[in-house]
Image 1: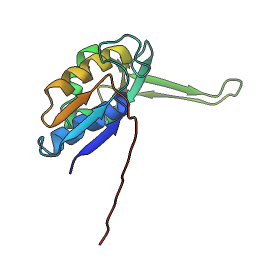
Image 2: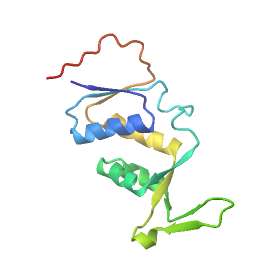
Image 3: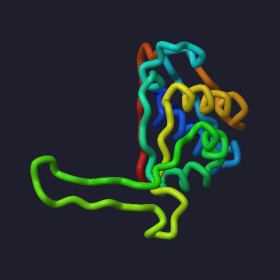
Image 4: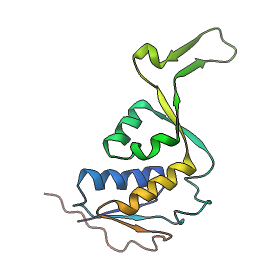
Length: 144
């Protein structure tokens, strides 16, 4: 048995790394991605930045990914929540929860480069990129 993941964006790349890490490379993973990893035109790893919650960063650390991303991340220490035009608001501060940060902001371009560097070394992972799925001929599931 092996796993085929179609799409090597943030979710697909992270899933491939998680399977590799948690199976110790015993479960083969084939990651199929249409865009070359070194391309600056990858739609999933463009110039946007995203915020990752602290729990997400912890899960990425658990599978050995966060350690490669941490130095390109910026900590979120305060979050201001309001509804424009209304009187109520709340401010969340990491220190109020005995946390170093509520989350982290990362630029997707940096994340993509680092995830694919990890994928190239991940046991049991085979990269197929740039490549596309042309056809799925037989899909058979037997339950007992």
